[in-house]
Image (cartoon, rainbow, N blue to C red; front, side, top):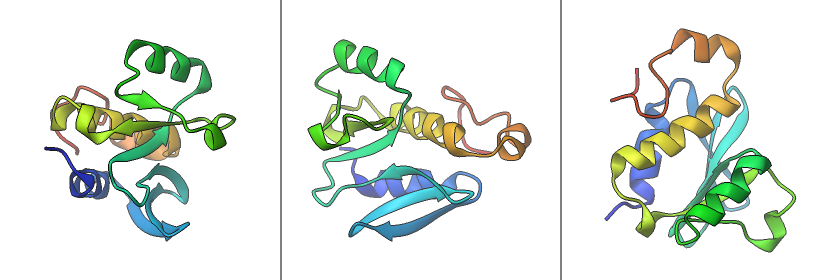
Length: 121
């Protein structure tokens, strides 16, 4: 089963990612911008997601994606670890969030970092 350690391992493999505790939970940042949080219960994680895409994700797979009421105004979505198909899906979700937060210089330097690519640069 996929767990919070898998999130940590994949996140830290992405260029210039650092782990920093905030709100008593691990967060992962690139160039100072947060792109993943892992809440205390470690059954889910949150990633960046444009609001216009978030509603579609939740409608398509409500067992996997959700937003708690206190985060409704944010551009983030939560992902249930138990609902993920495999580590490739986890990696794709984390890479997508990384790409949203990373500066252009990093995304341009790592063109292989795209959802669906086989492994991090």
